[in-house]
Length: 437
Image (tube, rainbow, N blue to C red; front, side, top):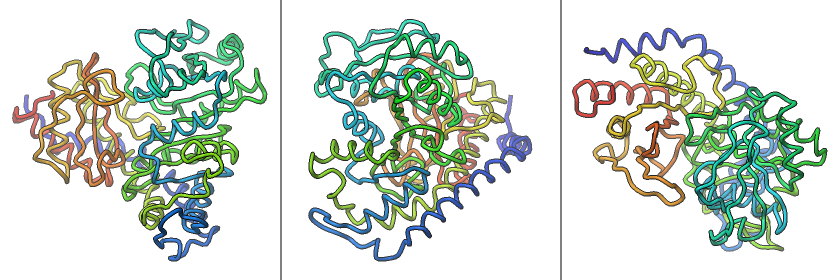
């Protein structure tokens, strides 16, 4: 049966009109906060200047840290081009704030695939599916070179959700697991159709419940894909530290590389000591003449993120109409930019990624192929014709080649690009060139 792509999209936009207005309200709140940060710290062209060598007393770098801290609503932040990815920023936060013999507890189940090796978890190990259930611990012996496990950090994994489980179960599970030097929360869903993305209010509830058992507990949040989707960040809801990538939301599509850590000043400095060296910490390190792009990207981020969220909602609405299992649903409140689409079929997953690639501004002629990727347990197919390699604030999608064959779509520098790519993909599928419905 023929599916009219234009009609499917137009009907979806009618259904989503009120929800889109809500997204605009959040973007306005975030834009005002970012502008206030620029004004407060008196951003001027002198902070765009290139520095060389050690970067001693780099006023541009120092202003960037202050502005990001204010934009994120927390005491301190560090933005560094030397952080090569979100995983690297998270690793700096973990290694910098944990010592041999310490315990790290994940409150939100299995972390994103690339953190498994950072922590030192080895498969096969299964996690309990309910709060208070069997916890997953570091496999013995730990053989992943340089991992937290090899350095003597003990890891326990719980699977807690403040909506699903309720306070009594969560408090009991935390008490049973024992105290930890650091509690880890992953905001986004990662490569999972069985878990949901947490709101920052959910994160705040988990922080409160942990501190009900251990009042001095410190909580770290992997905030990747979540920045500026809500009207405040996890650090405004009780998290001590968070980290993410500049080529995701906060870079606004302009940052060429880099990551950030933000939160309590001592924890931010600990992460920087891990990035550089004891005695150096955050005092050195040039920004490779990227200051203007990072500042401008932060300025653009609330608007760009809002467009990406709207694009994800549009895709959810249309793909749901075509019979795919989708999560979140089109009208669900959004807490990150990721849209999961379950195809249940390997070929359909591959075809969808190829269709999205075909309507990218860069490398539209390239045919994505499933392949092994460092840090991932399964073959992964990725579509991302982006101006910045790997930028997930630009429209991209990817998924591991395993059941239930789900793709995770994110980003879009403009809503119009997401809409155009979706229309093109629908037409390709209709013609049979890349059928996914």
